[in-house]
Image 1 (cartoon, helix red, strand yellow):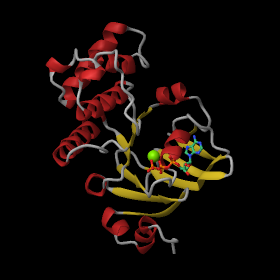
Image 2 (spheres, rainbow, N blue to C red):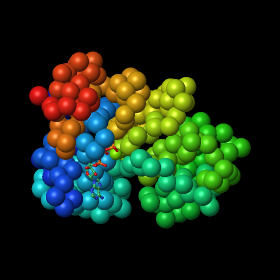
Image 3 (cartoon, helix red, strand yellow):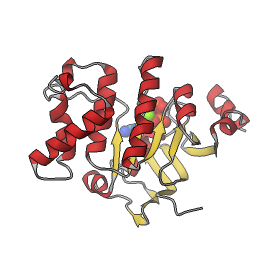
Image 4 (cartoon, protein in one colour):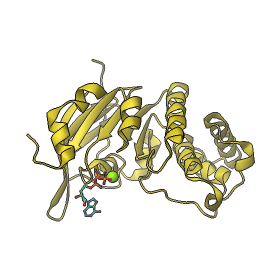
Length: 243
Ligand SMILES: Nc1ncnc2c1ncn2[C@@H]1O[C@H](COP(=O)(O)OP(=O)(O)OP(=O)(O)O)[C@@H](O)[C@H]1O
Ligand SMILES: [Mg+2]
């Protein structure tokens, strides 16, 4: 096995008496699409927040490209090459599509013209029509929002993107379109993706490997078909006590 791109080592994150992430460990390898699944409240978003510097874990380490990045602030982590999209759509009502993506690119260069060119290239590549580039965030559809969120993440020139419920709320044909775009950007930009998702058809179809969280811990990992048939995983989703 090659060295992992990202290593989560024994991470613990508490909120008061709740242990949201409870000694969680996992590895993510370069260029793979890893699905991270688990019932509501399993700790998936909190783990993303620990990786991206929103929270500092109380215990454990996050290692990215062999560097310990635990507890670094979010803007430093973005500059190291980790980008994300958010579970809740965070509308940029007063910016246009092009401006919103340009802001992402400005995290990597102080040159506005260069940032705008990067934004245009990315919007074109992911297939948002030019006629939509000057629309305000308040005027675009949900699938466009999801694609613009992805474009904003790409504009920071990441090596790794964490996608938090990117398919939620989309119609089946829109999910298929999004899956195609994700495969295309992975190839073009030599990316690694971690996909947190409840829509099983989407995440199982897209991911090469799946990690399952429950109550802050990893309870299973493997190929999608292995995980789907794992009794511990089935139990966790049915809400009964895991084996
Ligand atoms: N800021 C916070 N303050 C207090 N408790 C929190 C906070 N964020 C998350 N939690 C709690 O931590 C646990 C894990 O939540 P988290 O949002 O990480 O789960 P999740 O796997 O992303 O769930 P979902 O699939 O519903 O998005 C839950 O019990 C949640 O209520
Ligand atoms: Mg979540």
